[in-house]
Length: 140
Ligand code: CMP
Image 1: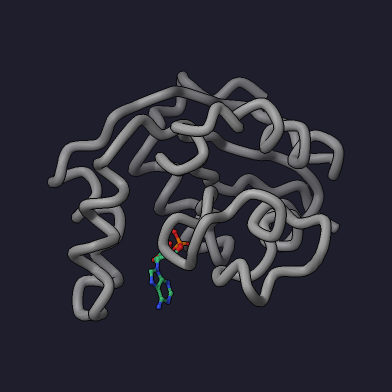
Image 2 (image 1 turned 90 degrees about the vertical axis):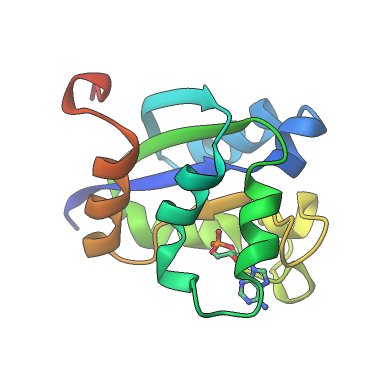
């Protein structure tokens, strides 16, 4: 399987509860490497741009408000099949549907405050990584 990169975001519900280290441990234990990382506080424009694909969804405004409600940690994760592996480690979007041992099963508060975001395809990973990091910030 090819070595890939994917974008990960540790969301405000997780930074608020000081869960950053526990979440990173899940990624590293699954064989993913953190090759870029920064803590940030998104503006409304940042969140609207990142989630523009969901602009027509009923949860969009609440999602933008939530993602700007506190600090986030942006990461690039690298590894074999990183996009799919990260989605496996995160678990289903709705924590009620997430498998035991996944980040969202263990830590998510709700479908909105679900602790982590991960790119859903290699194509979107490339777009999201370019949106959040310059090439020089990624050190593999
Ligand atoms: P994420 O992987 O960041 O992608 C879009 C986010 O919208 C999702 O995780 C959830 O946090 C949030 N969201 C809120 N409500 C819903 C919903 N009903 N279906 C899907 N995503 C939702």
